[in-house]
Length: 113
Length: 245
Image (tube, rainbow over all chains, first blue to last red; front, side, top):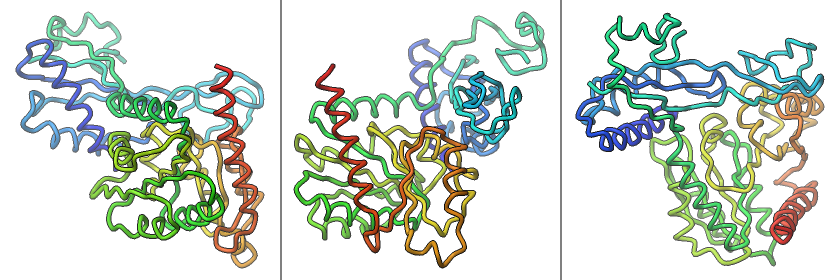
């Protein structure tokens, strides 16, 4: 639902960087999304095409890089990699895991045309 | 996977072979929500300067946020209070708050599904906050998007009602992971709807082992004191941390 707002933020950041580097047109934008970031990639791609119209990134390709989730297990104390927010600890089977990574939503790079 | 473009090559030099001109690559490395986070930091600094405490109230629609707020305002009659109300449409909730005597500003997000820190900053301007104010920000009823948007609050408080289903924390984990307190509201209905309160608590703690949990009924006033006590302890904790700093 909030993918449109996220794309408006991406547009602002891309336009600022394009201005700073005297870039007239952006061909590709890379975004990193953690697997717990609650962002639908399909909705983000759709919103990206719509929101970038009229900007330096009109028609640009959005490339999404997935990042895995990490969590501290409150049962065994280890930091473990998990792909599912409700996964059990792969080390001890514990069910109380507090995520430490996987919420990322970062604009990584862009490629000028 | 290649970390530059997401293609299947592991060697980033391969980009020359598939159309990438490295000299045209501009590093950004910025959080998508960086602008929101800057506004949130400004809101937080402004609240700290006023010795104010702000709570971001989050829940599904219909869990009783506004009812709880109205009862809380009446119970805290000596305290300076202000309320920011977020809904897609209508002034109804701000009208309900103003009827209690507390100042309230309504934000209508239109098509938006959450409040952001920029909107909240403008609402704070309109409220003319006084020093020592306890500010409640009632977010749009939505357990998904508001989790990602920092408003500059001191903490999030999630409200869920006994009619919503014990597995709600598992279905919408991010909101409960981001909250300091979960209030299980409408406890007066528990005996009528076959609800397992211990399952609610177990699911909340599975998602967030550190979360505080309170049961109450905003409608009957049952156990409202535990919530008021929690609020006062939080405000005192923030004031104490500041005086030690």
